[in-house]
Length: 305
Image (cartoon, rainbow, N blue to C red):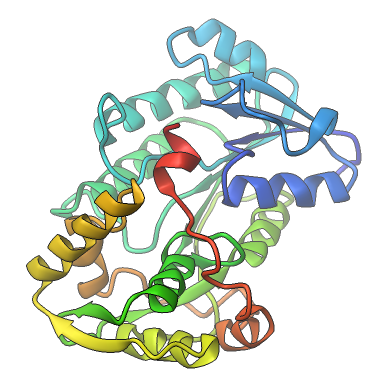
């Protein structure tokens, strides 16, 4: 990777995109972001140029990508809301891929999810698989990274579990709580994405950490570290989703969706490949547990407001 090349990160004001952009800046690269929120305060100041996505103007979108050695794509939606649907996100990604090819982008690094399938009953995982096929068939040089569930300061799932444990007298675990997940540190994912961009061949690989937990095991680990006394109770999946909706109404957010519960219970956030990311969640939790869950991480505030 040559210093001062132009690298474009979609969603550098978000979570994984912000970590990728930060790492690129440390390596001396020129960084541009495409964002759905170009009017938001730029956390990077003038070090990162911000431009809108221009999904409705393919020529302008291609112009914003022209000269880029690498595009790192984090664009997707966690759930359908208003006009932001999975089908629309897939169509927008198709437009982005066509623009990248027209612009002569050298390498396209795409963040997907573990265990995507076009046959999945879950639109998140099905849509991710559709987009992967689009990229593979696009003619672009590509890397597809499939992260499990991210952790790090300000993540949504693990941070908000801690937030709830700090404030509620009890926390519901859906079903038996023995379904597994394999957390991956967001900084490790960013490093893997930047390193993958330097490889020549087309690759599809999982991005997972070295530790796997049962869901209840993970919740109890977090509870012990933050000193919570909240009781852990087992609820049917439907009841847990209803409780999540009630909490979401109180905090003005979508805490969890039916599909996310189903994906967790189906063990879709576990990799079947050797772990490529070294940071252990247990060690990170010991170091950063005092700040975990002290503030709520709002999905709607981050992406829709």
